[in-house]
Length: 255
Image 1 (tube, rainbow, N blue to C red):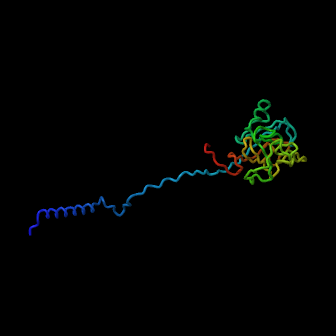
Image 2 (cartoon, one colour):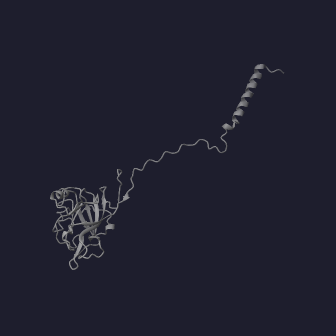
Image 3 (spheres, one colour):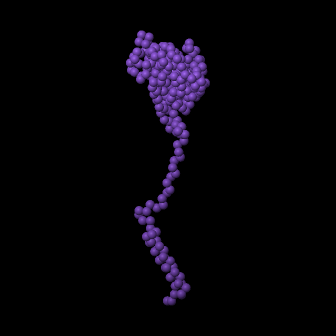
């Protein structure tokens, strides 16, 4: 039987298409293979930065042998030139020495808010009230230095405004009234154990201070006849962020 030519051509084209399709599906370039993972998803975006800074511990700073009008010597409170040494806790440095005699220089330093605490003999002053133009106040806590982890919210007094002291100083003067005991039998000034000064600085930041020794070199058993007195060794913690927290602080991004 003869097949019409158009039908024969159609059948031939159909077979050719089937052959091409089979060849294309068998092409090894198109076969993903058993080890091909297929399409790879893009990596996830990085997490957003943490907007909450991590608090860091506040350092305990120790200062040695700050001279506090030692001109007259002697172990007791005594007298002297009456000139204070002024100290800046933020910069950890003396800003005015007791030895400075130029009254214009002294007046400029005293009337500046940069200093925080001052020493003359056994008297400690703060930059506020009658002592200076700053925001300095203080109080004495009967607590160990390490146990004072937060400054009290109240109870402070500025120099000249402490009704509990006859002199009005924020930290009372006299043996056993403030930070020290004076033994007139041995002529020794000793820091009272378990006493911590909590204060605000000239700029209003909180700090805590512990006097460790009143004698040059901080001898364990001072000899009033051989160890020069009126040399303060003390430790302090300063909170620069304005809070009352005396353990940690938030780092300054600009630091």
